[in-house]
Image (cartoon, rainbow over the protein chains, first blue to last red):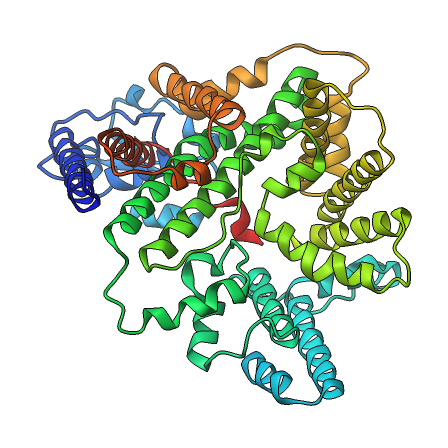
Length: 107
Length: 419
């Protein structure tokens, strides 16, 4: 194989892999970003960054499915909010969260 | 300023040349010390520390530790007439060339600057060089994103929970840090070398399977090679030359002093000074052992002794202060040998979840240990590189695996970025 051909194959494979990964991400849509998330139930995977997950979920998923937010640090992180019957409240707490970060989520 | 000083050095009389060089060294080292060491030195004087007299806390200019060394090398190489002063553009390019300006490899000007004129009217590197650069870059990316970050999760957890570590855990987390820093820094170096290759610039390699070495001398010939080269040429040799007669004791003193300075170069903390001093003592002992033709140590034992020396030194390197490092050692050498593994289990459970991610982390760590102790170095792989189907599959797999790993994990900054 010539070097030029090798580069073409490798770049094509990488571009194909990235395109596949992107398409898969849009199809699965784990944070409810790409289509109407009303009525969906999305888990927060502990294997990913909880910060990133909650930040992205706040873009469309949380406004569409919840009435309120619980903002705080690790103290409120483990509160079980589904037991609240009066309102649908999303637990936006993240360990070590401060007011500046909380404002990002709320906004 | 450095460019102008280099021109003055090359045109001046011998006595003047030395004065210009000394002025250049004082200015560069003073510049580095102002940003990096001023408060460290002031705070180390009991009177000032007691009265909390400190200079304003200045932020580090990006890559100051590395570009200061580049400037010093440039001045000395011009003084030694190893190279003529270059044009202002070439000098600026050499000092600020993005692949190595932040964290090295520390490149000698006589190796780099002469490559720049070839870039004028340059149509780009040939396909073989680009293919080799892609190969090196994908290797570096996997080292950093997959291997180093897998070890860092364990090491970070261990060093954040020293008080609860059992003896076994303290050893495991310290060993994790050794592998983390190796894959982190060598991965960065591979990517830096590959990035330079994309421009057709050949930068010195920085690592050559150092965790397999069987002596501290050999370790420094294979670990951060560009720093070793700098220490030898620009610190150790001048110290040695300053003696009227070279003896083994004086050579040992020069080694200890040079390595301690190199340790301090890493950052304004006594832990780095101790890190350097441990390696200085190790190197001096190693030199003495060789010169006096002491009995040979079996290969496995010599590997183990070497490993332990740099393992202990890296505990100082990783810990935030001396107190924390001594506390860590107290866990490693506890009188009450504790074998519990609760923290090890927590590392996999809490940070990565159970199931697939824990398995991926463990597989990455095992693969890392095998690669570091039994595999070829990236430099060797890069030199042997041919555009074959196997290498095509390797690069594609490495790059895609790194991409998926980047997407499912929190990326950690490079360890050497803080220097």
